[in-house]
Amino acid sequence: MNGAHALLGTLSANDVTVCFANPGTSEMHFVAALDDAPEMRGVLCLFEGVATGAADGFARVRGTPAATLLHLGPGLGNGWANLHNARRAHVPIVNIVGDHATYHAVYDAPLQSNIESLAAPLEGWYRRTTSSDELAADAAAAITASFGPPGRVATLVLPADVSWGEVRTTPSSFPVATRPGTSVLDEEAMDVALHALRTKRTTMLLGGSLRAEQLQLARRVAEATSARLIVETFPTIMGRGANVGEVERLIYLSEFAIDQLKDTEALILLGAREPVSFFAYPDVPSRLAPAGVEVVDLVEPGADTSAALEALVESLGAPRVAHTAAARASAPSGALTTHSFAAAIGATLPEGVIVADESNTSGVQLFAATRDAPEHQWMTLTGGAIGYGLPVAVGAAVASKGRVLALESDGSMMYTSQALWTMAREGLDVTVVGLSNRGYAILNYELQRVGATASGTASARMLDIDDPTLELAALAASMGVPGTRVTTAEALTEALERSYATPGPTFIEVMMPKGLN
Image 1 (cartoon, rainbow, N blue to C red):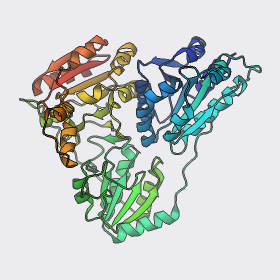
Image 2 (cartoon, rainbow, N blue to C red):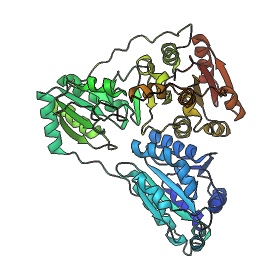
Image 3 (cartoon, one colour):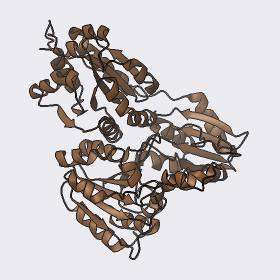
Image 4 (cartoon, helix red, strand yellow):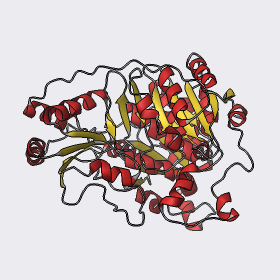
């Protein structure tokens, strides 16, 4: 048994049985050891940002970590943006970064870098293994650390000689990681929250992973106290659909969010941070809640909100809330607009689908249009680093073994389009809707919001991606994903229905009005 065998054995013994990988020379013994570990599914990704984003999507759906395999510091650097999203989403990931052999580091080879300095801003767990005999224990420690709570990125650096080195004492069993116990309720914060709910105009702000049951508990509390219930703009994953009931979402645009919260006297945070503006804007406050608001940190970000919500329901005697779903919207017709695009999604969405949403400004109507669709789950751009949608869809499809719908704007898609190849290679049931508007519409809007003056061709070319024109369906087809282009709402509806009935990945290029993201 070499170190790579010990690592894979420990991962598998702890139910970490998927590894999204972009390996290099230093990781070849790990790759070879996969032949002796049939329980481990190695998923090849053509870019590290796809591997890390896929691990994020897997964890959002499963609640347990997948592993990544990255090649030295540059590989970690390439995957860093989607690890940032995972960090903000508080999901568990076991991030394995190969490195030069321990004795080779002194020679400062071309790929030598300070891996620890790259991992440090992820604010997770870090260890560099230096012994093949210690690798199994270090792997178990990484898995334990990934669970937190809250969930986080655990980075284990694997030098090549530790991977190929012989394990001198073969373990009778691999070490078992420790999983977190039930979170302890803060009784003092609970009393403050109950007092606010009973005496003040209160807003409950929910964040993180929000299952349908949690949202239903929160609605009971809100109904019993006339409190306002809002979820973060970009929750990790949330249940939605006809049996869940609609929950208000914090508006992305800070000026509107300030107005949304203006009457709040007490703000109860359940798995959420105090809301702030995504960016700074001239003459616009960074804090979105009104001055003087009472802020109650009831459940920290990334922690399970179930216990707190159950306690609130019990203390208030909050009755169950009936939800009467409206009739599902009919399929749209005519030109493609943000409204007809959203209506087509809402009219065709299958039960149980998981949505990876990176539609950006094209998706402004989506939440309203899908409110009464069959029950489903929705993942959002937690962390704000674009290029997350396609990789997260890969991980979600591997984790769920069900249908995933990826809603992807054209500019964001180009960050990690390599994920399409992995979808085809793995035969994943992913429907990708590529929204082609040939421009960075959000940046054109932000240009105005920050007060920048731009009137010439140089600035215009920085915000236009139509020269040359991207052929999204053709790009998907080149990576093995059958693609089609639609120009009407009727054609989009038909293409969606056909894709849901077809095994494997499909790609639908939606020709939106130019400049509309």
